[in-house]
Image 1: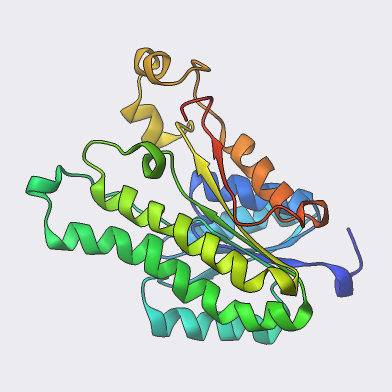
Image 2: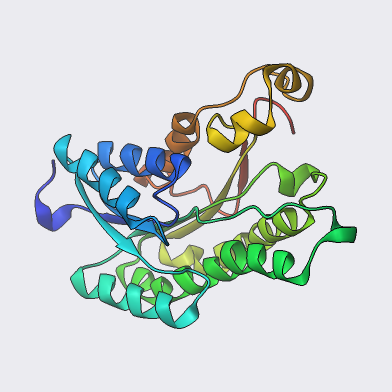
Amino acid sequence: MSDQKTVRRALVTGGSGELGAAICQALADAGWHVIVHAHQSLGRAEDTAQAIRVAGGEAQAVAFDVSDAQASTAAIEALLAQGTIQAVINNAGIHDDAPMAGMSGEQWHRVIDVSLHGFFHVTQPLLLPMARARFGRIVSVSSVAAQLGNRGQTNYAAAKAALHGASKSLAREMASRGITVNVVAPGVISGRMADAAFPPERIREVVPAQRAGTPQEVAALVVFLCSDVAGYINGQIIGVNGGMV
């Protein structure tokens, strides 16, 4: 592990979930101090942080609602008081699926509040500190649904597709300060939700690779985009989908 003074810190929103935990672990393995974020599942975030520490890495857990502007600002300020945050991985997101003809306004707004407004609430307060340091890595986790569309997910696809345009614009704004802004768009990734929604025969139909991806395959790309050697990759949407797009 690097000297404490040189260890970079990464905030991973939605770090208590399966994909988020894999990203946290991979970043810790690469030498980052990881801030594992949760909303209502602080216990799971603590478990992920503890597992990282047991393995010799550095991690802490934090809980706040990314859709709440005031709560997010207060949490980010408290984290910045502890030290610089050089990377943020916007992984927090929720599903609330329904055909749009039968979708409630609450379903529409709740999904967009977490994925899109959460991106703003968490990322915006980190931009000037990153700019002063002349280094930053912003990676947002989207979905193949934002690229292809998906029945019953107009809210989710809209929220994730909005991240694409926001990230491309933000990349142009911040590139001269040594800050990169990219999007990782996973396809069918193994885990509780995907395993229930995509039986093996369905995966063979829709995924050219004929298998689900793993959280670790997504996490590996996130870690690379956060590295020094990825400094010229900026404003990109990169799929991890087995050839679906």
